[in-house]
Amino acid sequence: MSTRKLLPLMIAGCLSAGGLVEFAHGADLMAVYRDAMAYDAQYAAARAALEAGREKLPQGRAGLLPTVGLASSTTWNKVSTTPRVAGSAEMNTNYNNSGWTVSLSQPLFRWQNWVAYTQSELAVAQSEAQFGLARQELIVRAAQAYFDVLLAQDTLAVAQAQKVAIAEQLESAKRNFEVGTATITDTHEAQARHDLTSAQEIAAENDLTVKRQVLRSVIGKEPEGLKNLKPGVQLARPQPDDIGKWVEMAESASASVRIYQALFEIATREVEKQRAGHYPTLDLVATRGRNSATNSSSAGYGSDSNANTIGLQLSIPIFAGGATASKDSEAVALKEKAGADLENARRTAALNARQAYLGVTSGMAQVKAYEAALTSSQSALDSNKLGYEVGVRINIDVLNAQSQLFDTRQKLAKARLDTLASLLKLKAAAGSLGEDDVAAINALLD
View 1 (cartoon, helix red, strand yellow):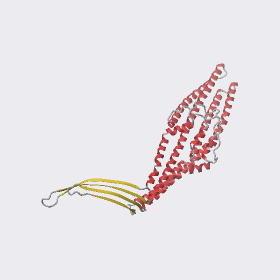
View 2 (cartoon, helix red, strand yellow):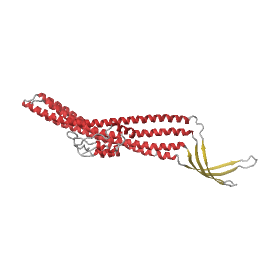
View 3 (tube, one colour):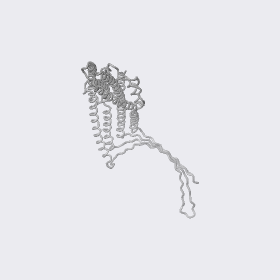
View 4 (cartoon, helix red, strand yellow):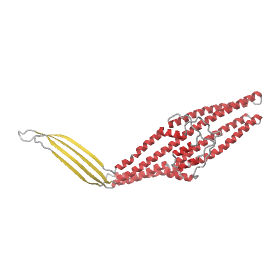
């Protein structure tokens, strides 16, 4: 099965009870991604770099094709001649020389030019891979910015809901104190917890503003409202459910690996290209020219001449001061460097795939655990509230149960979004992340 088709099977979403809070419906992930493609400066730079890289191919092909040149000139001449004979007068000759020459040179054997042409093909492949990497990075950055805003919104909503709940508990503590069923300590505890939550609400508001500005820097406009995850969706394990398979895909198909693979091939051919500096070259050369001369002296004469040539030109390098041998050694060393860079890229891709895979699997486990913990925390809160009403629990027990419930909600929301982000990173590490994966996650939005 193609890895590009796996993400819809891997994602099945999240239970919404107490989780992400619904905000005004607006942009979804696909709209954010498309806005980012049109606005993001890094992506625009990568697109321009791709267009520049594609020009390497005609440049490399030019070394195999003929070159044609045209040269022309015109010269006005004045020659003064004084004979060494007594009584002879000075003679002046004025004339014009003009002419043109068309020359053609067709390489017949220049091995370095053929190697340069193969290098240009590899350079285009490298540019394509570099652009593919930029596109995948844009998807990850846009999705991460989107998820960060969702999480910041949820953090703020949780803080506000917790503040309301604590305010109710504070009012209850005040009433109980007034009727003599509770001590002033309960009121102070509730007031302290209320003040703390107010501070957390302010911090959450500031964090949401920052996260929205980060998203704005990616899409170029203020996000009016982002769609949230649908309720009642579950997560499925990644397919293939084998970390080794994902590592293998990353080592062979990762965009960064393909970039360094192309660079290694270019470096390999550079060694061959520099060694070709020791080889002879053979060119077909041809010229056609015309030259005209006129004379304005009293003797008046002029001439026209035409010349056509065609032949073979052989050049054999003998000694260039050691430059050719030095460039050969340099190319060999650079090939070794490119090989080491390629190996490092493979190891890094494998590490990224392992980290992303573990992020997905551990994230799914955390989601299930937090979902269970959310149910337990709600039950604990209900029990503590009932116990407080009948006098077997004190106010701090209720406050702690409330804090635990809201903290669990926050952690559940974060685990869900982190898991979705890890899914995208896993596909990126395997080199198969694309717009259809964005659409797969977008389908989970309400």
